[in-house]
Image (cartoon, rainbow, N blue to C red):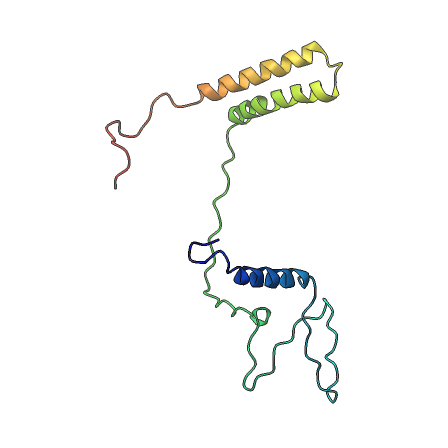
Length: 155
């Protein structure tokens, strides 16, 4: 009870309770729709596959998103130049790279598919890898040609 009401005025609470009970009782019922006039045919049944039709408006048709086609790009006449040929490399460099890459590949192949590989072949693969790696490291330049007093990028 609120402090504003007197103890003998229970009438408004009963009206609220009755209205609440009426609302709850009709909760699952669908509201009744007005009947259409008898002279008009019933509206067609629409299934989920029917696309919604926009109302017909006077004037030019409104473009839809799929009606858009981009304008053709103008031909500017630019043709990129031919790329320079790849460097052929020297024979020791190619052999060093082949030994560095093919040695471990042979070891993986032998471990997966050729369990009975000769220890001599496995040892040759290890030596080929190590020799190719050492050859590549030895071919690196021993000093840099650029200026040593460079402070980094210039902004």
